[in-house]
Length: 426
Image (cartoon, rainbow, N blue to C red; front, side, top):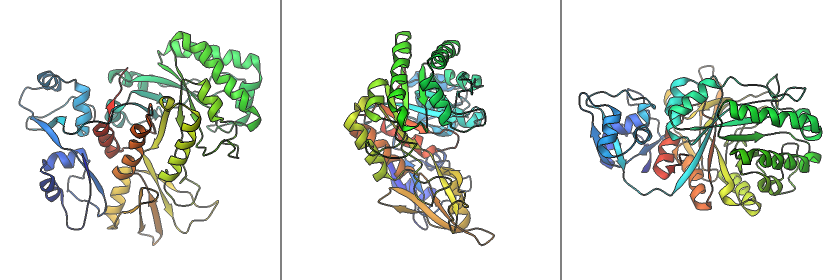
């Protein structure tokens, strides 16, 4: 696997010739537009197959998989352009095996809202170990707010992906609420009732485990939050349900702020079966233009986490989106638009601008002027930035990666994930 950065004058054909790979595979895997247009500075993931199969009339994916002694999920992962679907045409080329040794096996978790595009979800599920529908909130009476996740869980089952129940302090109005967290953590009857409802939901929908995401918890509830996670593990582990807890991105134990103070890495890491480091959103909707997950900041959080939590308990949070800011940035006024990897490439092509790369942040960015004469600044994730973060998993012996979220296409991220790791299946 190689990451190629497009230079002026290059085409899919010239790049494919350079690496000795079929141009149609290079184009389809990277979801290049049908006209073959590329942006200068755009990345392409060049896969090096050591076995390519040309589909013959009457063959199915199941027949081809059996012929080579692999499963259909392997064919889906090696051929992103199949989008997790079994339809193939005579003459199509499929990668059966890739060259290169993988770095190890990794658990992969992805978060999705119930309204995710079905085709997009099918494209992504072959790369997942877990799917976490977002989210089961808590009512003002401490009752579990149900989620219509039947379609998500049904889709996950078709790809041998385990569902995780996501429990958060999201309210009926859609925001995280500190008071709901305090209610659960301080009222014994509410907490007991909520845990009973969680157990019932885990069993009713055949979830694999529980993912707890209490955000904006007041600092004085630090010990109570850890005790709550410990109680969940005590009651759920004997039933076969592991408990994962999401952690705000802290670089030190005494980091101040409502988002951080009750997220005690040492206490929560000891109580939970696993943790997710939410290492993203430095660049965010209402903040100034910058990388969503600058590598130095990610590494600071990971370094602190590793000092107090066993590495094998840690999932590294990785974003698969970017933001488009209209300039000049004005605090409290400017609202960045969330965009996908593919949308970022398309904008660069549309406006004929070169994508640049910040070597410190390890993230791509560019500027363009829209039809109304407004200047924009875009930061997003490409193959280079994704690789920088994904390699941290093997380098530090982490359990896996958690993608926030699956709502936008990020084909290059999945090509890299599959080239670097075997994806755990339970």
